[in-house]
Length: 132
Image (cartoon, rainbow, N blue to C red; front, side):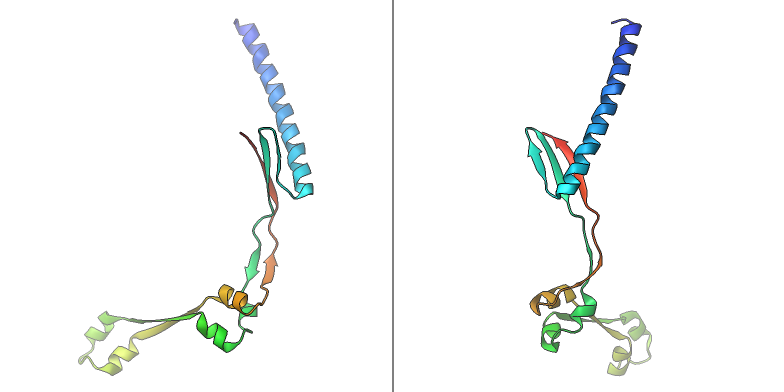
């Protein structure tokens, strides 16, 4: 193939690539409207609704106390370096440098109490083409 033929083929490839990109854009837009994954032959367009941002804490705090307590974790952590620097190691010093970290799994609390989370943000739908 001489340089003239090569240039012609490269321009042809550029045009076909542009056509393919435009066609894929149309397909993706159609799948976004359908809101459903499509598969025809070896072409698959996967639809994803997007990830929503949920607030479990606010409604979870309204759950029954026994349910909240069931999914609450308490961890005590002592800063032993500070305790050891005290003149005497006494329970008073240990207590002074001990923190209780409390965490609540509000998602599980809400699910257990059958409380719906607050939707803070809807997900952004997307579609992706793959050729298998």
